[in-house]
Length: 295
Image 1: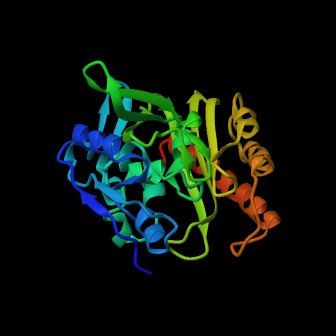
Image 2 (image 1 turned 135 degrees about the vertical axis):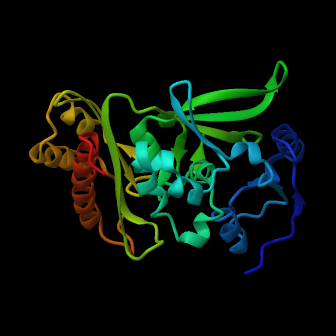
């Protein structure tokens, strides 16, 4: 199908983009990678009368460590994340995630910020960011010196399917992930029907250790609920343990119990819960292996 008519805007700066969103109102949409918005427009599920293209905002394209965080600009392409030496060496869970999103053609344009801002529980980065305890940096109007910036904990960002804490006149500008320190590891596992498909289920695990004992754990699930699910009881079950296979299996059972899958063409509720259990256990054990120096 063909999208409805719309006016196109290409701001040269972030401030100009925010100003445009304020002036154009509720019928304006941000165009970044476009791989979620454009298909919806073609199906007339989204009919914005104005598109604000932020692809020209190159200052939102970066991956760097700064002030205790790994900072990822919202316009960073998935392909950039996938091929980053810094990510591969110190944050391989992000490589796990980016390389299973759609296909290489899509990843060349799709943005990390867009994957989060769309608020789709079937997207892969949301669960990864929940497990890692990320923060979302947002910029919008209203600051004393022009525009204001606010930071939201990832657990407070997702409000429901395709719903987030992002206001219409705000732009997600950065993702901040606490830097790895000491003995830690993280991993993401996903099951899909075919390469490039949305997940039947997915699981992210992030672990920190003091010696042999786990001191903190983050476990989050993809596409088995209205938002990415933080499996609290599963996390708690790992703290204080050595994260043996038995410990991982126990936590995986708790993660499966926390999932809220809906049966569809990808599988029944029972099947998806079983896959959550399997994927969570695998993600936990790979995270432990990485914490011990493995890849």
